[in-house]
Each structure stands twice: as C-alpha cells, then as structure tokens.
Image (tube, helix red, strand yellow):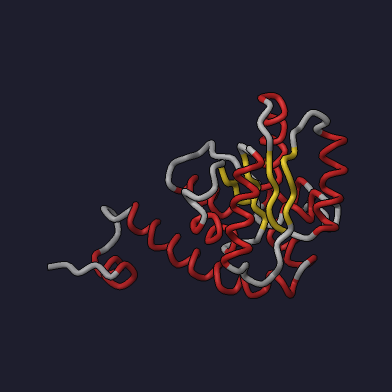
Amino acid sequence: GMPLVWMMRLQGARYQNRVAGMDILLESCQLAQTLGVSVFFVGSQTEILSRMRKRLENEFPNLKVAAMEPLPFRPLTTKEDEALIEKINASGAGIVFVSLGCPKQEKWMEQHQGKIQAVMIGLGGVFPVYAGIHKRAPRMVRDLGFEWLYRWIQEPRRLWNRYVTTIPPFLLLAFKQILMSSSISTPFHIRERYLGWRVE
C-alpha cells in the first residue's frame, strides 16, 4: 500500500512502486496461465467466487482453476480444516489465493504453513472487487494513496474497526523507525522519550 511506499521512500528506496492485491492477482494469473500452474481460491462467498470464475474464464481462458472454496465467517472445526487442507493438496494447485481480510488471512496462512503444499498469497478484499461487487478506486485516487478511504466509504462497518486498530500502531512504529534511521542527528532526549532508549 501507499503508506509503505511512502515509508520506503523516506528510507531511501526512491523508486519503490505500490503493489496492490489486485495487481498481484492479475499478474499471477497471467503467469500461472503461461506456465501451466493451477491455482486455488480460498475465502469469500459462493456467489462472489462464481462471478470471479466467469470473469477468470473470460480474461484467462487457459488458466487452470483447481477449485474455489468459500469459508464461513466462524472458525473452521478441526475436522473441517483438515478436510480443506487435504482438498487443497489433492488438487495439485501451485498457488493458493487467500482472501479473508487483514490480519485474518495472515494468521490463517501462518497456521497452515508447512501443511499446505503450495505458495499461499494473501489478497485482502480483492475477491469482491474482481467479482464486480465493489468498485476499485480510480487510478488517480490510488496514486494519491487514498484507496483505503475509497474502500472505507464502500464498506464503513467492516473496515472501521480494522482501520482504528491498525493505523495508529502503524503510524507509531513508522515514526519510531524514522527516528531510528536518523539517530545520528536526533537529540538524545527525543530518542529516549519516543524509542525507549536510555543514554548512560
């Protein structure tokens, strides 16, 4: 996202571009189609996955879709989870696209590391956008770094809690990292106050 791009540019990576989940999905599907790698989709709802399949068949006619598996909002039981793992591995998929939202999908992928025999890629809320349920922000809005606001307007209830709980910690950690990177020119009392450093 753009906040990470801005942070990297402040750290000296001047030519780092934004890599959005939608761009990862499209580029990965194109590459998988070319290389003959099958893909598996996990998350979202049956209706959304059905719409995605139709668009994928139109845009990537040679893409091998191993399966599409919706997940309930509740946690899976141990038996259900084991069945899902078995289904993914038996499909022979080389890539598993996971769309459960952040940070749920990151936790899910971490829990299944070493169990699922494929590369797992978290795509956030890309599935509904690709399916046409939600609209993607215009290019100018994305370039300005306000796609998060555009999405918030579309799904205020779902995203409100996430933004409230993730943005403040990110800003704090970003501020601390900036101070650490410029520690040579930062006064000791500022470093001690904001970074917890003790000067002896």
